[in-house]
Amino acid sequence: MKYQIEEISKQIKIEKTIKKIIKTIMLVLLITLLISNIIMFYQTNIKHAEIPQVAGISVFNIVSESMEPTINVNDLIVIRKCKESEIKNKDIITYKKEDGTVVTHRVIRKNKEKGETVYTTKGDNNPVEDDGVVKYSQVHGKYVFKIKGIGGFVEKLQKNNGLISVAIAVIIFVILKNGRDKKKENRKITREKYDIKKKRDEYNAKNKKNT
Image (cartoon, rainbow, N blue to C red; front, side, top):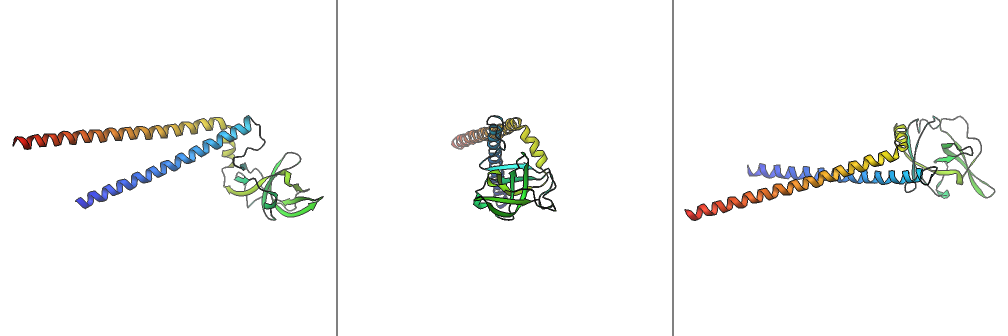
């Protein structure tokens, strides 16, 4: 019986530890997301940045089939700001054309024009390479990875960045408040158990003395 109790107690401790770790991870992710949203909101609405970045990282929703099957419509792509020397042949880059259009295509060739490096690009799904060349000054960043099918959803979130930040802040507050209330409740239960044990010991000591 004692063995069973010890095993149950051990299992309960493990479950509590796991829950605590999960809660900590959730809070870290939520706080990171909140900070990122605040930065993006500031860059978009106050600094009026053309492409918001957090620590050199930007995200884009893909609306064209030009990079299929590598990248599909409504995929969310993550790009990072990079140095000119980091861009190699076959890398995928996101750049701004002269007409203001933002394009994500693959570098198929690097050349020098008037001492400046330029890139010839092409969509994986396109039969011919893109017109003209891309200068490094036009490059927003280098493709890192994609998350399939959530680009449209994230784009909508970015349009409501302020509301999303408020919602995340409320969630963080609720989690922290629940944790604090739980600790208070546990302390109360511990005090009650201690008081009961103390009274029981006093009662037993009194009875033993009387006998």
